[in-house]
Image 1 (cartoon, rainbow, N blue to C red):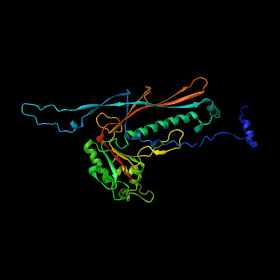
Image 2 (tube, helix red, strand yellow):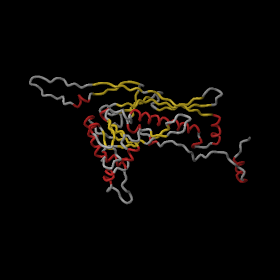
Image 3 (cartoon, rainbow, N blue to C red):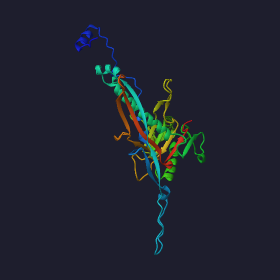
Image 4 (tube, one colour):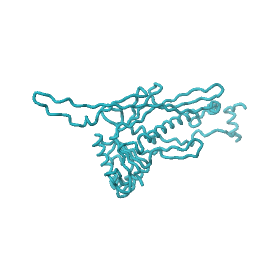
Length: 343
């Protein structure tokens, strides 16, 4: 069939006989998560590295925190102070995803010259980007936001038992979370020499804190008729004395290919993590964790996209995504994990 010219289409439209078989280009049902839902890169600093594996130094906290200054004896000198130094390792492994692009099916979209969701190449690039973010979030949950990861872990219960690191759950109307987190911040400052600056919350923990009467009471006189007082992440950050509160509300499908969707939150919805982490890599201060990143293709980016044509006759292009990271816990004394925060 010959391709219709614009004037032919105009005539058919006027006659009411033109029935286009085209997809909408200004609407698409695509369950991509918003970028702000991915919290892994917000909580722990990214540290680019030149080699896929290597070492980094750790200065002895015990030696740095001890008073090593001694009284000078007459006509003599004190013994040299010890400044201990050890090392730790990182290892960035390369992960990959590949999707296909049928050149023949793509031809319709190219000829239609339609933007947006109708562009299969753009859609696949966005799919790979989403997969990279999802993969990092799942790694974050496994490496950082999980029971059994941190040496200092508290468990929510109906009654408090500080000796066994048990606290009253935050949906109990008789518990004051601000007082509790203040005490834990003091613990971290004492042990790790830094006051925690970030608090990560599972969605159920966040909901319980939003509705806690002690927190509501603290802000009830701060609102106006046009701007009523509400509890959000910024308000909680001020209440708990941290720079940032991050709600971990990204979701994923836990079901294998071909099975019905099994949608779950990536991070424990009843968990919380109070921590000190630098915003950028530093050589003169600690951080409870780092995300080491390696540019596996030498282009300066630890997330890389590449495209190539398949064998002759397949009329298929392939697009790949590569990522090389190592999410590593570096200092147990700079974080406390809380599990079962809600009943």
